[in-house]
Amino acid sequence: VLESQEVRGLVLVGRDLLRECRHQRDHDESHAERDYLSYPEPGKALLCQFTFSAVSNVGDSGSPVFQYEASTGKAWLAGIAWGRIVFTQETYFSSMVSVQAELGPLTVSSLIY
Amino acid sequence: VKPIWFVLLVVGCNESAVGPQPDLCEAAQALRSSPEFLTVAEEADIAARVLPGGFGGLHQELGVNSDGVLVAHFKENDTTDNLKANLRTLLLCNGAYPGWSGRMIVSDLSSIVIRQGQYTATELLMFLRALESLRSDPVVWAIEIDPELNRVWVGLRNASDLSRIEQLVTQRGVPPASVSIEVPPPIRGDEQFQVINGDVQTRPFPGEFGALWFPLAVRFTNLQESPRYAQWCVEGDAQSAIRYFEYVLERWDGSQWKIAKYTVCATVLMPPRSILPGESATDSIPIVGARRLNTVPPWLTARITGTYRFVGMVYESLTATPPFVADPAQAEEQVSVPFRLVNTLPF
Image 1 (tube, each protein chain N blue to C red):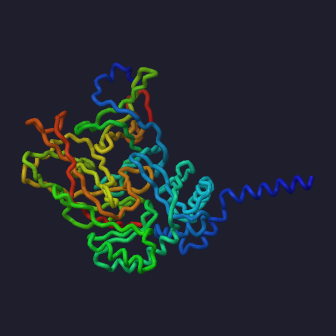
Image 2: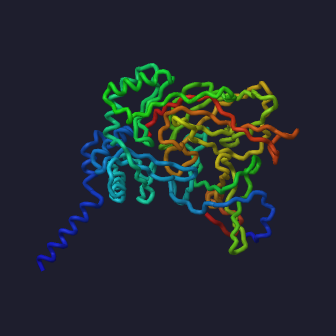
Image 3: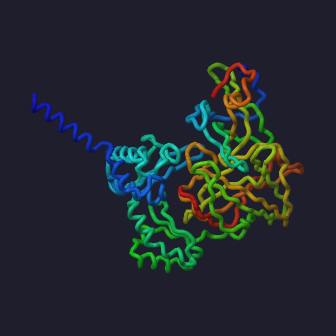
């Protein structure tokens, strides 16, 4: 958990962070909001990808995505940004739950998914 | 006691008569030539023959980052709760559209929208078959049932044959109002994108149910007097990344262009490419889209076959530095000349 003053340096502030994974597919604990079909890797999909409503810029891939909760004054590490849709002004990110499911536990003290 | 018991029994029977009808499934199974998915038109026909209310077809109206709603056309007025309940019963038991419920279309009642249709799916299939011979006409490039329009859709190569095709439709006993004949959209003359590979067909996306892809070769030619810049849309991992113009695809609906497909691009730091006046840049782009639930990038139009245009994003830089970090560049949406896409997939 990060205190609110620690995230003041963020240059991109979005809204409508999608919090709930709504279905499961292919494997046990994968929570998918959107499966992303990628080419040129046919047969592969990025499961359980999330968005927030602000468009990131080139070079923003790999940035942490935080969700600020006004009620507690704290920000939660939600995921890692990787893509954007210019048309809809949205940014895609992989949730920390998914990241840790693949890489193992990381040193963060709390999560959303 | 007996008279009271009798009255309760009658009320119970009446309630079951207006609710979901489980025998719909048996009736549909009896009509099927195969438990496997047939064609969309044939599945709709089976549903129309067992569902009360004059079923005209269905399609998932996918939204941007949303599964949207399942739209079903019905010809007759009825209480929509009954129509929805019966339709849901039929879909869940795979009596029609086997394999679609929960994958291609939503199954919860609250996400089903009933719209007034003019034709049943059985009528539309009959009209489609009556018009099959038009496929051999050189001016006709596609004939399909359009579930959004609740009509048969016919694509023509040029507008000058419109009245002749309209006459042929009438001669084959098909009501003119049941057919939407589309002529090519106007060409503006200032299109700076060109689709090089002409007419294209959809292909199944390997390993992914309800998804499609096709390659599209596009060329941008800068016809203006100052340089244009284009950000790279990057896909794939470090070993197999490909890059191309950021774009959307729009489909012509007979009167206007409608968004059909948008791109999701990795936000990799790369300098944009510069295209000087008179110069061209060419990309081969794998266009990927999904008509199933919970998937990006979605293909937003239910009728995939149609006339499309490529809308690419370029920028005019106002500064000497490349416009990739906080540059006050003027974004332009440059369009291509139209191209035809034929869907070969069963959705």
